[in-house]
Image (cartoon, rainbow, N blue to C red):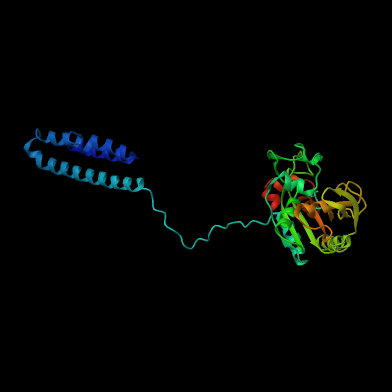
Length: 336
Ligand code: PHE
């Protein structure tokens, strides 16, 4: 009988060692410690033992019960500890997580630089809506009713005679409608054209418009202002030329070219081997435009100009595909 008690103790110990979960532990409890478990059965067996053996047996059985119960309790509390989620203490001495700081988009940088130059020349900054009516985008700007730019092919229409502005020139009309000359403003913003996206053109892009109206404004003032701008923006050593052009809202009209600073005028891929880069469109405000806003063309004259920002950013940073500006690739953007 004493051997049996010792044997039960050994089996209990090995089985307890194998316990991993609280469910395993419950199996051990049922097998040994429960009301009809092995230990209870051993106590039962004492009844039939010889009187002389009983004291020794009782002592051994009580020891067995105490020691198994104690080991069981210990295991149980250690399992319950590990089952509880551990509290993670704050380590207040750890350094914070660094947040990478972004850079200004190259288009924004170019726009800010252009604004800075014109503001220093006394221009104010005005804006207008991206969604325009046919009247502001075309009619008031002296586009003939059958002008091809009014075609669906070139313009993104939203509804009948409501469209996404194809240039920032409609803001000229809005500015002149709300104030009398003198007007000296630049008007930056988005413009939209229904064109196929390519390495050189986007459906949505930015322009900066300029307008100066007062008594006796001349074409040489237009040239003087734009040359002063180009020298500040592109560098004082650039060469430039004005070429006659056509816009319905200016007469005469001119486009300004600067020497290609990639090849220095020798001819390369960027300047299409001409040595020149076209940087803006400009001209003297057409009398019909003044009439549309209620200015007297006999009393006032003025000049206007417009340039594309993305194109300028391409030239400035030597980017050969305009689309990369809007791919939001951080590896590209963080270079600026
Ligand atoms: N709006 C013209 C364009 O988008 C540019 C321009 C502006 C030309 C002002 C003359 C005067 O091409």
